[in-house]
Image (cartoon, helix red, strand yellow):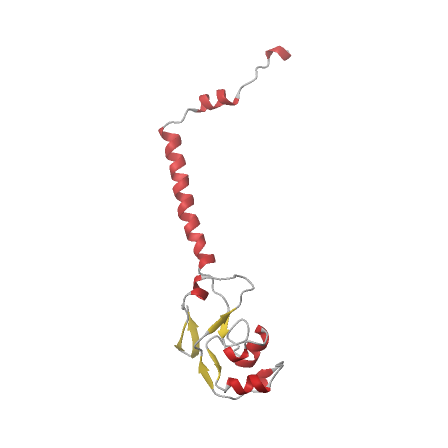
Length: 152
């Protein structure tokens, strides 16, 4: 009975299924085309990721990122981080940087101060190191209906 079992070679199975014909080439090309298009569609999620950002103040560069944000940027409940993305306090930063070595809860220091629009931004690099948004000026802060905000 063991002699009746025949072993089938993989090449024999391929020849039964069919050699490389027009059908196999068509299927291969269609799958390759679909894969190429879908990779391109998913890549934009990583290339143009929306990175959290806020105003950058050069005079506060000796402070940590968290201290810079707390000192220079007013609170905004409409954002995920609770800080504005488009405005900063309008104060003389040279005097603030020289007078203060540590800033813990600085939002209270400038609470009620005037604000001005940002001319430079810093980005949160915890999720992405860089994206098109952080490398090219893609944010425009314009007044929106119901308040100010940023458009990407």
